[in-house]
Length: 201
Image (tube, rainbow, N blue to C red):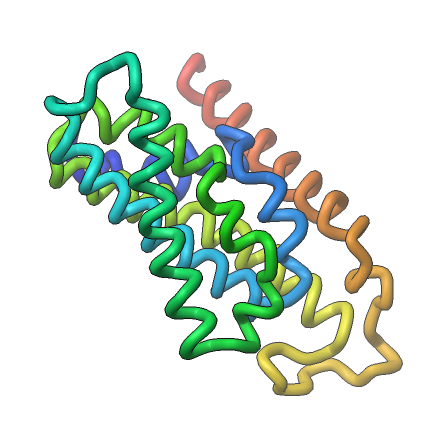
């Protein structure tokens, strides 16, 4: 498989959130602001790419019977690094993300790519897969965070763009993330169905 195809699949045709429907918990919970969304996205990209590299390098040495515990140990090591870096250098973001940082260890996206790709592919394809899947996740959660923050508070990253009287308070509520994600899933489904129809015709 071409590296460009692997990369594009992670972002578009096999997006972890919109197509595979994994990583939904953090996507829904963290997308209350754009900064939180990007912070979580970057963390996932780092952990996903690094764990893919290590698992790909060790795949011939990890017995099949203990592969899942081995994956978790590798992933947890990189999550610990992320947690320590955020706590030391970006404490505000660390506090905002809270429990969802250590929960990256059991994020379905990372475990799925370790099991479904890195364990059976070489290092370079695994790096590309990690970057593509991570960017796909970041793009989705970033859009949710951007829309919720700008329409809920009228500002983005501290810059006011919409007067307060035109904001929609509901967008700051947890339920809005479910509705917005549902809209995104519907759009992706419609686009996918139209492509299938064109291929058939």
